[in-house]
Length: 99
Image (cartoon, rainbow, N blue to C red; front, side, top):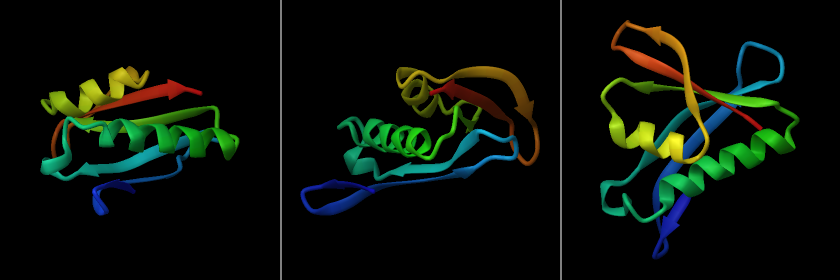
C-alpha cells in the first residue's frame, strides 16, 4: 500500500509466476490524486524488494498497450519489454526485470 496524508492512495499485488524463480507483479493502482508524487515508484520498489527477499530472480508483468504512463513507470524502475504480446481481451505487452 502507498499512503499520502494518512490516506491509502495506491495498492500493488504480486505472487509467484509459472516458471520457477519468477515473480509476477499482477496489479498496481494509484489514485489519480496521488499520481506524479512517487506512489507508483514506491509500490514497484516494494514488490521488487519482496521478490528479492523471497528468493525470486526476476519479476514479470503485463502492461496494456498504450498505457504510456504505466510503461514509463516500469521502465524507470528497470523493466524492459520481453517481446511477448497477448491480444485478448486487449493487447498487453510483457515486461521483465532481473533482480
